[in-house]
Amino acid sequence: MRFSDWADDPRKTARWQRFRRMLIGKFPVCERCGERVSTEGHHLVSVRHARWLAFDLENVRALCHQCHVDAHNGPISYRPRPTDPEETPPYGE
Image (cartoon, rainbow, N blue to C red; front, side, top):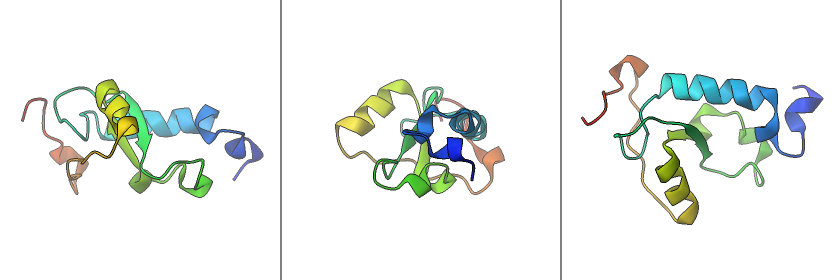
């Protein structure tokens, strides 16, 4: 791992930007509501507590902005991830 990956906040690195683009490309529909376009990555375990999970796909969920705000205001549940990304349902299903 490069030193820049361990900046004060890993989410401010170029590596995070690439990871986020990959996450949203893989899960284009919000993993909570399933209705809106995912625009943000949300860490299930905060990078402040577990920096080694910052780029772990199992620790990050692709959410729309509103669901991301809700996630920071209290516990929420997520839709199960498809085992095959091609199975991602279209909006509204």
